[in-house]
Figure (tube, rainbow, N blue to C red):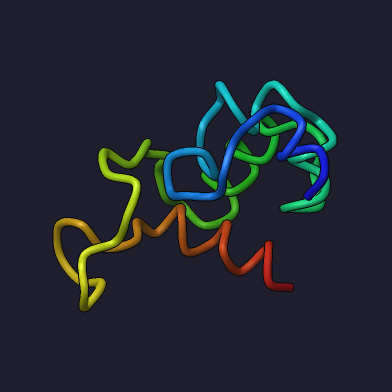
Length: 84
C-alpha cells in the first residue's frame, strides 16, 4: 500500500476502480489485484464474468448494498480479487 500513499490517494470506491489512479500505477494495481495492467484487468473481468466496467459515482456505499449506491458487479469482483 506504500505505492498508493506515494500518489497521495486514499482507498475508496472511486480510487479503487479509477483508470486515473489505479490504471496509471502498475505497482498499486499489482499490490491490490494481482494484475499490473488495469486495462487488461478490466477486459479480463468483463470477458470472464460477462459484466461491464462502470465507474462509481459516489465514494461510499449506501447501507444495505442493494440497488443504487451498492457495489456494482465489477466492484464485487475487484473486492474478491483484493481479498483473495
